[in-house]
Every structure is written in structure tokens, then in C-alpha cells.
View 1: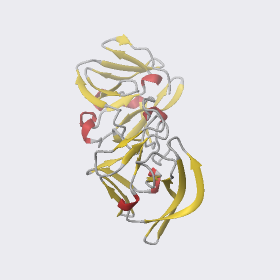
View 2: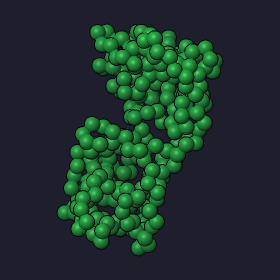
View 3: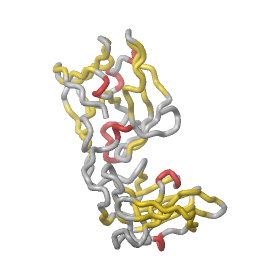
View 4: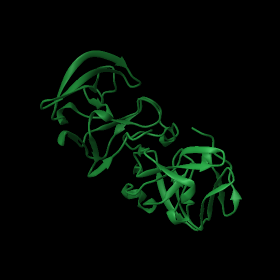
Length: 259
């Protein structure tokens, strides 16, 4: 996870939607390449090619760039797709898009599903979306709490806070974000890791812990500029419950299984 933006496996919500499911997107979807619009639509559909999260499928008429058939065909959960390159001005992006065939559900036939990383920025209405589309069946809440949080590892106290912000995200363990003033900063070292989450945004920092038993890489993180819905966690730090000893109001919590 060094330097380039990556996605932690634990950011994927639990499977809750069957592969092949299709439904309308009730939002305007736009995407850009080299600062220019490639698509702009209010007629997109969510399509779940696997159960974890959806992708957008967009009517070809709402795409302002050219698609060039690359002659490769694959079978996906909802139907057959053909791979296309994207040509926008002088820029050509191979393997950027997939066009659904006649065996797909009626609402998908002839529509286009782009590889997320082939375009540089995606927006739902006027808010940027990261990593992949947000599932309409995933909920994320950030609630302030007077619950005291203590984090220990190998007998070392890494954080001891009188309150926190709890983040509840579908399919994930509850995360407990604490103010940095309550961290044992001498025991933590910043790393160059960056991850992104479609519901919270892009991290501004990760920390590794140095204990008597060695270095535990990237066990804590922060979002200095989270999405609007997660503003209560701005600048706060959370630890992976799976990798530390976490106490809530003095009671040790069981470690969740690692994903």
C-alpha cells in the first residue's frame, strides 16, 4: 500500500446483493478524463457483477467520447460484454469500457460499463466518488459518543481517550475515532500509505506502531478531509480493532476476525 492510492480489503462491505442484480441510479452521474467530461447521464443503472458493490452502466448516447471495439468478449453475471478502448481527443485508453450484449437484461443492452480507473474523476451529482460507486444498500453513520476508548498493543498504550466518534458501516466492525491529543505519539510513526473508501474519502495519513515486539505497520489512520457525511471524523484517528487490544469504558473487546 505504499504511496499510490490503494483500497484495503476491509473496506469492502459484506455481500448483501446478488450478482446480476440491476436497478436505476436516481442521481446524475458524470466522469472526466484529462479534465474533460466523458459521460454525463441521469439514466445510469447500477449493475452488480459480484455481490460486494455495484458499477454504473451508462447509455451510449450519454457518452461524449468514442468507443473502439477491441474484439474481446466475456461472460459476466448479467450477460455478455465486449471490451472497448476509449478515445477522447488525442488520448486513447485501452480496455476502458465494456458494452453489454443482447443476452443482458433489457435495461443494460447496449449500455456501457467503464473500468473505474480508466477515468480520472467520478461524481454523483456534484460530490466526487472514490474507488467504486456507493451501494444504495450500504449505510455509514458517524456518531459522537462519551464512551472512553483505550488502545493497547504488546503492553503499550497507543491511545487513551475519554470520548470518541463511532463509525457504523454496513458489514464492517464499528470503528472508534479519537482526538490526536490522546495518542501516544512517541509510539507511533507515520507511513506513506494511502487508501480510499467510497463512503469516507481518501485517507490523509497512516501510522505504524513500534513496540517491544517489533513494528506493526499501518494499524491506525485518519481522514483530514472526509466526505460530507463523515465530517465528525475530520482529523481523528482510528485503529484496526482486529490488530490491537481495544477497551471501551475499561472493558476489553473481542477482536473481530480479519477480513
